[in-house]
Image 1 (cartoon, rainbow, N blue to C red):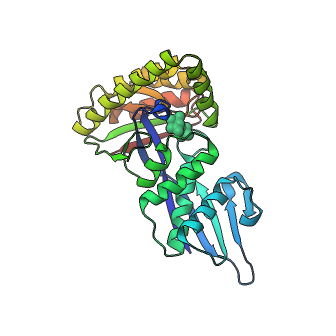
Image 2: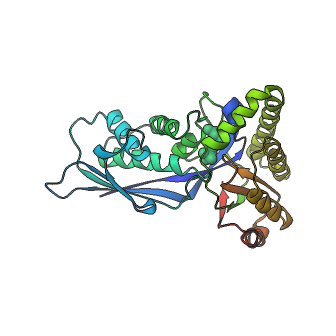
Image 3: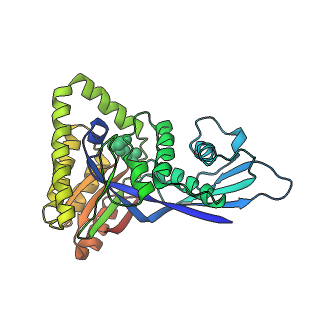
Length: 310
Ligand code: PMV
């Protein structure tokens, strides 16, 4: 039996603007993982069986739709590994990450499947290749992914990311205490991404200006993270959130959680990921973490995760 896993992720700054060429910063969430177990099938049984008990799905690779993301991960990885002979295996995929919520569940599933197959077949892959395969699968989920999700999940390191540039892995000098509140509203990435694209096409001047302002916030945030002087990092999160609100990407549920976190003493709070649902992120001092957690639950968060990033 082989086991492999991949982490979730959170975008600290720059979501959406990253699709339009601005930089963004994302961090791995190493304690929230998707795990894939690979076992050989019983003798006499052939094929690749995919089991995803979290979403009540169990199916054979040869019966899966062409655009099925898990099946695509298997097909692309076997191709990349140059495996031509049939493999007879049973893959079980289990995740701690809520789906369609901004925590990178799809990238984590892809990377975990790729790592599991590569380990099971004893054919190592470069991280860059793992990221590239996962990117191809992200393209199935939504047409124009920036590539930030597959990158941060594959490298499992904080990343400063500009579309179509080599990702820069950045050191974080002072550990960050983050609280993630899940609105429980699942939102497919394509919906806010497409909506924003329509708005940008109608008014490129205004939206382009907002994207640039976000880019400037990201550059300042990078310096703060690298130097460890993070006193104003929370303010930058708030500024980024205001711009995301201006672009119409927040939601009633997100606003409620963001307001509650700030009121309970968070240093800053913003939505993270595609928005219009999914998760919000708050930066806290270690001694206010519990207070903010309680406030988020009271404000309707379906799940709250406390995490430290360093
Ligand atoms: O919600 P997620 O985890 O799919 O993140 C989307 C991030 C966007 O910037 C909105 C889109 C992208 O491709 O970068």
